[in-house]
Length: 117
Image (tube, rainbow, N blue to C red; front, side):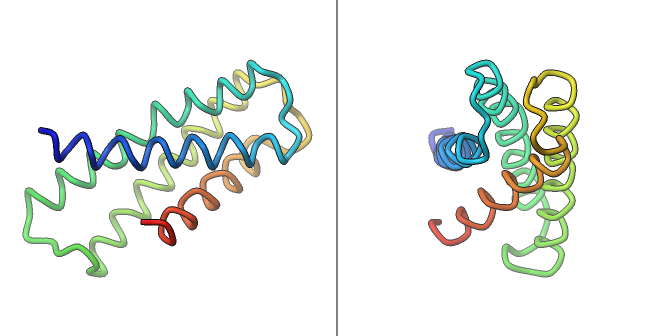
């Protein structure tokens, strides 16, 4: 159980830090909008990581295989879309369209996560 929490907590903390900082750089200034960025990630990030862990551990799919990368891609696209919908419904920020904002934030945190972890 502790191992699962480690696999969920670190990616969530890094994602929240990266995406919130980048949102601020992209001129998201409303404290409520920044809170929505945090909450959206608290919703999607653990789900993405938990589903990935469950699929990988419950099958003979090897980490680093093409199949594993396809699973990650599908999960990341679902997270991107979910966050974009949440941003569209909840945020006041209008400088970038929600789909673009979500894409920039998610691509950045995913890419930096690959480098860091």
